[in-house]
Amino acid sequence: MKVLYVLRYWPALTETFVAREVAELTRRGHTVAVWSLGTRADSALAEVPPVPVWRAPWWVRWRRSEPAHAALGAVQSTRRAVEADWVTDRARRWGVQRVHAHFAGEAAECARSVAEALGVPWSVTGHAVDLARPRPSVASLVQGASPFVVVCEAWRSRVQSRWGGDPYVVPCGVDVDVPQADPGHEDGFQVMCVARDVPKKGLDDLIAACADLRLDLTIVGSPADGVLRPPFVGACQPSQVPGWLRTAGVFALASRVAEDGDDEGLPVAILEAMAAGLPIVATAVAGVPEVVDEVVGWCVPPGDLGALRDALAEASVSPQVRARRGAAARRRIIAQGRTIEGQVDALLAAWSRG
Image (cartoon, rainbow, N blue to C red; front, top):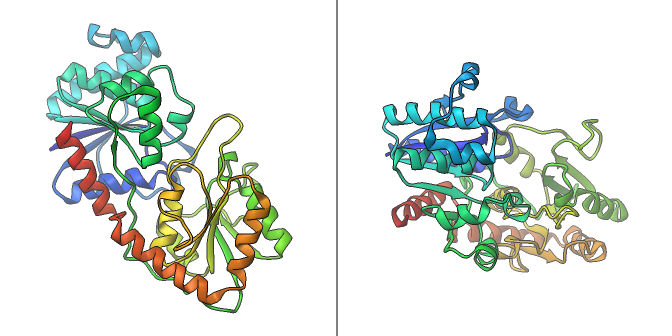
């Protein structure tokens, strides 16, 4: 099958779930091309599969939009509509059989426009910020996509209650063939976090809790102001994350709903830590309780600094508990099929349904 992915940015360091999905599709013999609407500063560190990337040349802005993209031109810029003309022509010659977008935003609007002009099915994977802070087009995307996909049961319920439709859950998957941590070691207990420094990740709460307990915290990521300082060690390539995880005693993420409404889906960093055999300290937002409980870690209310401190304190003094819950975390990831292969199995099943 020939699939055109429409993405706001490609490559993007933090969107490993897209790159891995594309890589697994191509491994299975499908042919994928990417229409990238723009670029992002973190692309230099991203690791992406070698697939064709379509970016409309500068001169498309001088072309006249075809009637097929009149609706797109009405909700976006004329330039984006003529880009869609250019992509539609190229996709028709290439023989595209399906168009798919990640995030229910501008890229999804463009994917729908191109697919309808081609007469092929189109689908969208919604994640979190795109659903928590939606564009006006979201209702039509949810109801029109074949199918509309979400990454966790929590968002399936929310989407249904707000916009209707019948979303299909395709959980993000991770590589389980990774070096294993030893969370039960008693020397040099370390709290590990892999996250962007944005309000919904709650890094200020995590930093405060670890400071109160005098725990060693490492955050793989860069501070929002760009000035690298402890506990931040900077962003790294996805292939380097397992090396950081294997040094830790626990993985922690204190997510919350941000003041602007931004929310989580189900953070892939939590799944990666579980695959590495780490117990998890996390907050009960969005899809997190679907994987984190007292069997695999500690799940506390978001924004409750006292509960977060208590969980971290218990983890820090309980090596046997850490070891037991870390082992259970890895077993859960595998048992629930939250692997890259499982992600693509579910996506292909969703496409066949659509």
